Amino acid sequence: DTEVTQTPKHLVMGMTNKKSLKCEQHMGHRAMYWYKQKAKKPPELMFVYSYEKLSINESVPSRFSPECPNSSLLNLHLHALQPEDSALYLCASSQVGGNQPQHFGDGTRLSIL
Amino acid sequence: DQQVKQNSPSLSVQEGRISILNCDYTNSMFDYFLWYKKYPAEGPTFLISISSIKDKNEDGRFTVFLNKSAKHLSLHIVPSQPGDSAVYFCAASGGGNQFYFGTGTSLTVIP
Image (cartoon, rainbow over all chains, first blue to last red):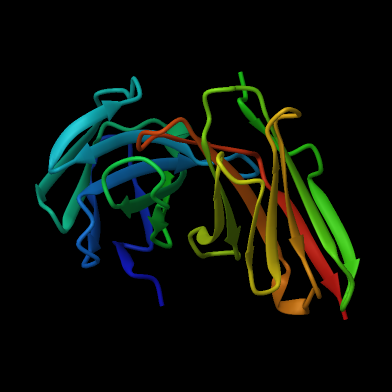
């Protein structure tokens, strides 16, 4: 069982829809991450939150909007996505600071019609 | 440009033998390295890590070796078991919370 929980596991949405991906962890970690992974590619970092503040935004389009309402929760709000945004979206958490492994959820498989 | 590379997309090994997975990196500022295992329909699971102050770290059947001068690390699994069949990603960090992942090696352990 993963200690990082992501919902939903699968999501199909149209290009005009608004939806949100959710991530929750109860390991006391204060750093949380969103990654995007396409088939046969490595995970690509999108956002990093440290102590509930956005610390890294890897030039992600504004149609992706992250939110960290508290130390246990991380959301990714989606609006007006494109078909090329179809991918596996992974959430991870870790202790803040260097040399700390990240712990991943099982991801949300997103399909854009 | 890919800073962490896994040049072997796949590897097949007989059960009980050693599996060796390789990873190369280009950024000399990387000082922390990890291996993750990923089963289909699951997220990556942290396996083992090594800091640049060490050249070997062992955890049960898994050993990671780091050769800083060659910018190369490897994961040894001994003995290999069918349950080890998965995709293995190496990752590297330069001291912050930003990790760079390789493209993965799919390991198949043949019973």
